[in-house]
Image (cartoon, rainbow, N blue to C red; front, side, top):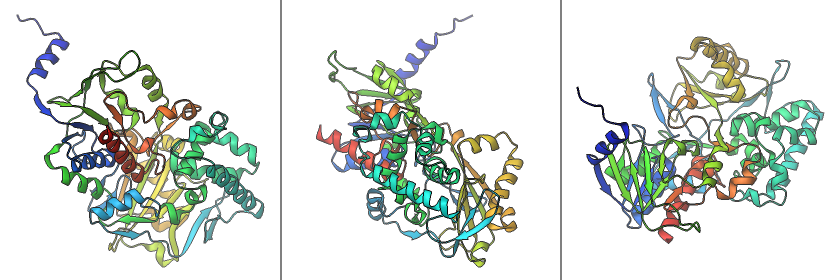
Length: 475
């Protein structure tokens, strides 16, 4: 009877039979950030290899076919201020089209009353409207003081990071409906965490990343346009420029590097990225994945203490993106834009998401944070019924019977684990934010989760890819 090999010995033997690739830079993650960095580096004459754990490129961008319907399972919107994304779309020869928004919007009040309105301010009592407008003005003033690239540099950063956004709103108004509606734009709609779970500083960064809080509450601005054929065409187009330098189904298990000297400076030597079948030897590595996935990789030697602590204070939010496709966009005939909001509804917001040139109509709704937790205690059929019932409160009984129904559940995705992006816990942004992007020796970090302008969006991912590539090229 033979003696079983020790697992560590077996791994060493396996590594001896791996394919070896030598390159200048290895990029972990074939999302918009990693692919942007790779194309910029390649254009400058560097050799690159991109290792992607999934069987597709795109990361949190994923345009899928579900029962014959093209659905934007992941990110999809293009805003007028997203210069980096707009430039990339133009470079790739892609076209955009404006989201349908003709007609009246819908708001559901606390008592269930359905109210139609136009413009940005919800049809609420005059006192509540005054409080909402006042809160927007106060937030715009504060946001104007925040540098989205360095919110921790604000003189009151620590103070603002030690009070939850819910508490901060409570110091500004006692109008519950005003607090719920303002909170909804940052919490349910963006960070996808309850307002008590993140700080006022984190909320201000979210608004500053879009230019102002007013931009964030303006659906016609923040959710302006879409790419014909789907936004995943951006990473697909970037990957096409890289050819066989992109390797799919290659989760990185280990990074071997030379460590840091006693004074914190970089030791000579590069890095080796190890997957189940590849060893990629490079001078630099870019981790272009969400920060919560950094711990999925073993580091030899370990990352410094600061990074171990920092990365534990970031977590993903959680939202279900609900797609409902109908034979026709029936709401348009009723004079509705498809835009709908309510802090009292299971689906706190919904929009006309009909594809360019499609005769069918598509609605997209969102169920966030604790509400999403709740519906996942139900069976799939019960969950579908509850979500469609919520949509029917906005659009009428016809919303109950889509021909295609699909839920984007990024919380169950092994290589994402939440949506839309990671944010800091209370106090974490002021305490750790300044170190978030700092390279550790040959190890660089780039993703939308750590962007300033364009934070949480594809635009931010592209900006971070450009930034890190530029740093590597500058030496």
